[in-house]
Image (tube, rainbow, N blue to C red; front, side, top):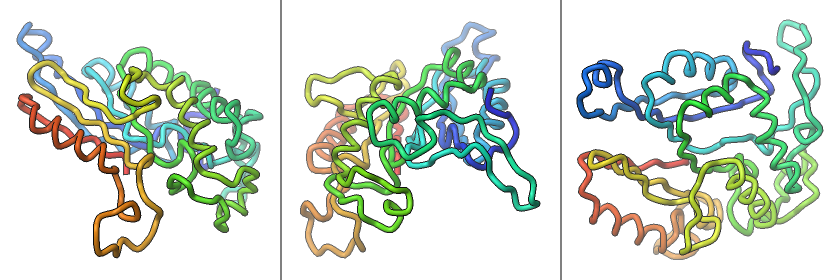
Length: 254
């Protein structure tokens, strides 16, 4: 099992948005009232997910994962030297020993996370609504990016096309995250999730349709300035206009 103290090399879960109901409403049999809380789980994610499981699972109706469900660009070494000179030993797997480039390696990142008992417990008890960000593919990627930055060279990427990585990463993401397939576009991540008449959640995809990373100084709206892309923007406007839910939550991954 992965150690449940701070693990400086492994980040299991980074961001969760928890949607739930309080016990007192369930106990009285009244209509469930959605509540929400933000939960930032970073470098010590393995330890803190245990706390989330013990405290939050009994009252949650769902959890929105705002991306970085894995760190495909974060290899985990067998040993890591701590600032005090001690040696930290990690649980390792072949697929986490290097950056993910093949489909098997992307799948292996999700399998590695599932070694953690607390995460498996959380997944078994709480519905997960997931979107992706950058680390499911590689840090700060954009479609068509050549993987030639200094960071890519340091991590020894063999594949040089971000779109190729994204295609493999997307397949693994859809295999391990509970998403319904859409007829409109294969592999689409953005969607609306309704929680009865009270809540509509609009899950965005801020990675798949964006333009090149830059200074953001474009004088007009065009491919270089895309963030959501025209199709997704039009979808979001239309769905927000049509929504009759009391609460409208826009889940952004970036």
